[in-house]
Length: 192
Image (cartoon, rainbow, N blue to C red):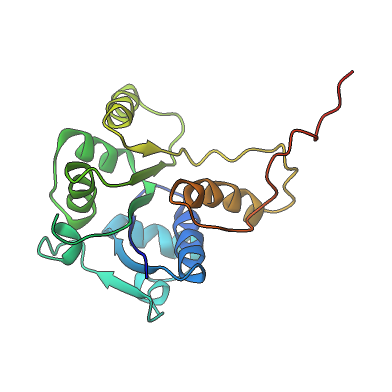
């Protein structure tokens, strides 16, 4: 069974994290879920659930964000992917600066030091210059940055379709087969 560390931090966009967790569990993955204090606030505000409710599945282990001795804090523990979705600007800044003061940032830094797949999904608007520079550095260091900025060429008819657009991009990065939306074929436009 493939395993992922998924962290939900304080940026708005908790629905992306919830949908990602659901999609990974549906694909047969085991999840080590980390929810920061601010992430829990947004889970409640945006989704009406607690971290414990989100983790109410045998495939999900809810980790304490204050536990720097958790499995995901160690480079000797192997995970197939590390995803922070959504990623707050503060979390981006900490990761880019090498600050591992909680399990979410420590797990991300473990992924970087072990050269494993790390995906950050920022959901801020507009981005501040320090966060843009941090994201540029992280990208140069091999981190995949997927802004929560859905496309519209697939003519979405619901918020769920917009959320699925971003979650599909995350799943593509870790080679998870899915049916979250229609793939571009090149035949959507006609030559004039």
